[in-house]
Image (tube, rainbow, N blue to C red; front, top):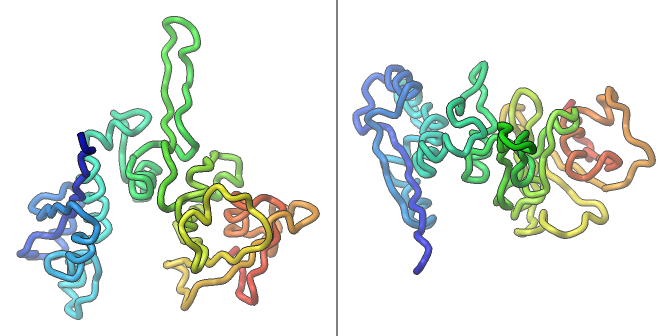
Length: 273
């Protein structure tokens, strides 16, 4: 028979928002009282963003301060919506150790399970390709299955912690279907993308010649994107680890995708260190 199409669930604040600060505090514990809207197609979901209750639930565009605080729950609503669509118990089972699964980690930072859920639809705990097993080689020995990314996502992921040797980002996240990457650089996330590129331009093609990558940091008070020209293999030697001028934080992230010998030209913009 035909495969069952997954319905997307989107949460919105209760119609009567009441005291905004109390609503947000309640949302931090659980999405009690939120409306749950279901959509069977992307066009229907896109159309719903222009109408109440979604039109004012996620973006703080209201002029009234109280309404603005009420709308500031958008990040929580997005996370709850992703979990509701996947299924809470399924999200828990996606993690390496389900009984320890959490979406918000220390200091209020999101966990890798949260990032992977939003990017791939699966709350796996790792960013390498496929699965890996720890232990279990001997009869009766305990084993732990580490779950990574099972298929190519629409949007990719790059991390400075790969440059530090702390983790491995697999080819599926490095070569997503669209040339768009969430860039993790220690304290927060920013965005890299190829302007005007088509789907699969980040895919299986061999990297040849130079290309332009746009960089945008929503927390960096940028008026516009920075254009970075990347030339894979353009350097004779790898830049020094502590050379912030040539090998700053974002440069390190970019070189996890296009190689340690990639030459970078910020085209007159100040590099992000």
